[in-house]
Image (cartoon, rainbow over all chains, first blue to last red; front, top):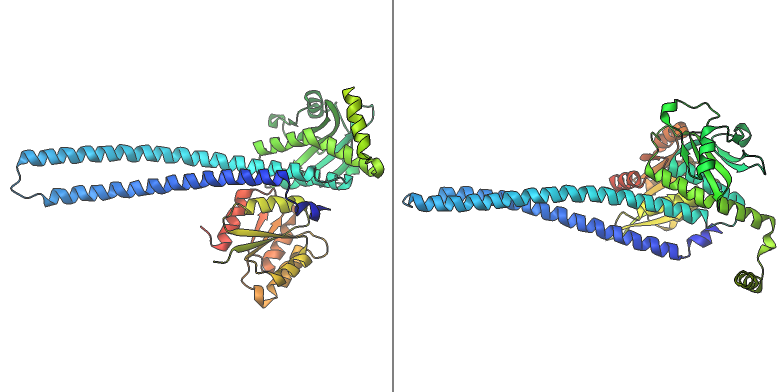
Length: 279
Length: 125
């Protein structure tokens, strides 16, 4: 099923292509500016050499006044070039900073695009669960974590799937835990305050609510990160946000579809539903 | 001039797509994908690749077996191989490097790291 999906050019692929083109043009523009900077540097050196040789080539019988004028003129030209060179250096630094910022944005968009694409490209519940795990492992660098679903009417969340541990070895999470309570009450990912010290093995360091509309249908709880993952960056927060807004819907719809594969109805059924909605 | 070709060997479609997007930013580099080691060997037999990026844990034929098979084939002696590992894969990483892999990338995957590693191995500026 995936192979077939991957071989088709989707509107999302086209948008990704367009985004890549925009960034490539940005890269080319910056490269051209850097080349211009190099060219001007060379020109300054060249003019300094010319000034030196002009000084040496002045005939000995030229009047002091004339020499003074030439000297003043060359000094002015030198000063103009020096200012221009400094302005270009400043521009170059600004463009370098901008380039790095574009690079970061590019990486963020690529990660969010792939995560979103994969999350929404399956109609199979186990695959959808695996995609959530892969996003957390490969994109975020989470080491020990689980996907938890709400336990009916009770305000607790039980482990459904996990990485780095067996689901049965993970605790049932309740709003007695401050981080869980924070995520559930705000509907936004919550990150443990480092000033609270090291968490116990059963305390999450990140809690990502999985929302369906305004309802919290589950959580992703991260208990530890991979060793090389030293900090939570903006990209991680963006990925947590993507899971908050999308994962519950994907998990529930794929589950329902798996339970009732004959759920797809003739188009008339869809039309009737739209008409009933408009009525 | 012939276009450079990279082969991504990964069983996870998510990882394949992420790596392919990162490599697409290297100008002149065409990217092909394989689901596992066996699929990679089939593609190697019919295409000329300039670099392989492979995961270690895969069904059918894992990354370690792939590295061994590639290095034991005279045709691919100089073909750079990059392995993708997790922190828990220290032993696998050492084994892969001992078998002849040229470099490794650790998860989480970051595009600049992938691009830098591949460019260095391909001798691109």
